Image 1 (cartoon, one colour):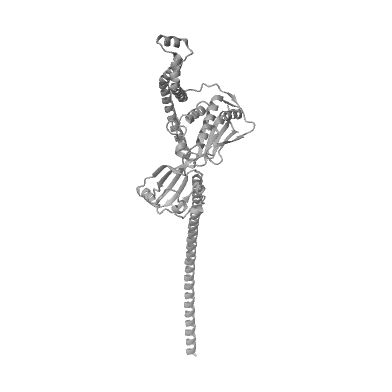
Image 2 (spheres, one colour; image 1 turned 120 degrees about the vertical axis):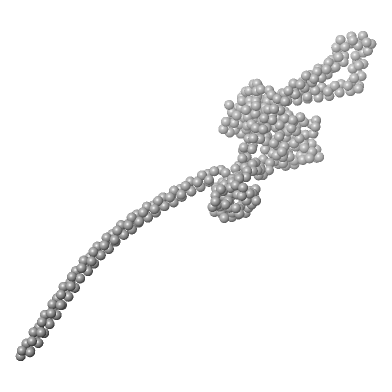
Amino acid sequence: MIGGDIEANTLLWALVALQTIIIIGIQLSRSRYKRKKEDLGQAQKNLEQRVIERTNKLRNINNQLYDEIAKHEITEELLRETQDYLNSIINSMPSVLIGITRQGVITHWNTAAARITDIEAKEALGQHLAEVYPDLPVTTEMIHETIDKGVPQINENIQHGQDNHAQHSDLTIYPLLSSEISGAVIRLDDVTMRVRIETMMIQNEKMMSLGELAAGMAHEINNPLSAILHGIQNIYRRTSPDLDQNHRIADDIGIKVEQVHAYLKARDIFKFLDAIREAGDRSARIVTNMLEFSRSNNRDHQLVSLPELLEHSLELAKNSFELQTPEGSEQLEVVKEFDVDLPLVRCSPTEMQQVILNLLRNACQAFNDEEYGAPLYPKITLRIHASAGSVSIEVQDNGPGMSEAVSRHIFEPFFTTKEVGKGTGLGLSVTYFIVTEHHDGTIEVESYPGKGTNFIITLPLR
C-alpha cells in the first residue's frame, strides 16, 4: 500500500515536472514568437519603408523620363520645323540646287531643278546625276576634285541653245565640309538677263565712243568734201555758155566757149563731173549720218498718227518693192496689221519716217540676196499695237534672216554684210540712235536664219 502511494506520488511529481517544463517551454516559445513577431513587424516596416523609398525614386525617375521624352518631342518638332523651313527656303530659291554624293547619286532635288527638268524630286532622288540631268556640264572628275580640294568650282556664262533662243547660266559646285558626309551641292543660276544687259551696256558704250569718233571724222571730212563740191560747181559755171564773163575771157585768148563746151560734152567730161558730184553728194549724206551719232535731240516733236506715217512711208518706198527673179520681176506683198483706236505718239515724223524707210530698204535688200535668192512668196508685214504706256511698230519679213553673230552687231556703226562700196553700215546705227536717243524708245531685232527678220520699235506714250 505504501509502495503504491510512493509510485503514485512519484508519477504525480513527474507529471508536475513535465507540466512545468511544458509550461516553461511554452512561455519560452511565446517569448520567441513574440520577439520573432516583433522582428517580423520591424522587418515589414523596414520593407514597407524601402518599398516607399523605391516607389518614390521610381516615380522621380519616371517623371524625369517623361520630362526627357517631352523635351525630345519638342526637339524633334523644332528639328522638323527647321527642316521644313530650310526646305521652303531652298525650294523658293530660283536657283537650281542639287545635292549629290561623291559617286554622283542625287540626295537633294529642289523645286527649281524639278521645274527646269520636268522631273519630280521623288523620281530624281537616288538616281545618278548623269541619268537624270544629262545636259548639266558636271562630270564625276569635277565632283571628286571639288570634294578632295574643298574649294568650290565656278563656271560662268554657260550657253544653252543657239541664236535668239540662247540661255546663259552660272554653274557652281560647292563641297560639303563635314567629317560625316562626303558630297557636294550643285547650284545653277539663270543669268541670261544679266548677260543681255552686260552686252547692251557694252554695245551702248561702244556706240557712244564710235559716235564721238564718227562726229570728229565727219567734221574732218566735211571740209575737203565741201571744197570738192564747190570746185565741181565752179567748173560747171566757168564752162557754161550762159555766162557773159566766160565769153569775154574766151575771146581774150582766142577761143569760143561753145567749142570748149562741145569738146567737154563730146569727151563725156560732164558725165565724169556728174559722177564726181553724185559721189560727193553721197559722201555728204554719209557725213550727215555720221553727225547723227553725236547730235542732241533738238528735233521738233509733235503728235503723230503712226498708221498715217507708215502709209506715207510705204508710198515713198514703193519703187523698192520690185524684186528681180529668174522668171522676171515680182512685186512684194505688204501686209498691214494695225490696231484700231491707236493713240497719237509724240515723235519727230521726219526722223521716224527715216527709220521706217531704212527698215523697209533693208528688208528689200535682204530679198535680193544672191546666195539666198528671193523667197517663193516675198512678204513684208507691218504691225502697230499699243500696250500700257507704249506703242510698238514691227517690220517683219520672210527673207533669209540673220545669224546670231550678225544680229548681235547689226546696230553698230560701220557694221555691214555688204560688199565694199555697196554699204556704209550706218543706216541701222542711225536708226538705233534716232529711236533710243531722240525718242527715248527701244529697238530690238528677232531673226532666224532661213525664216526671216523682225524689227520691233517701242515708243513711250508721253
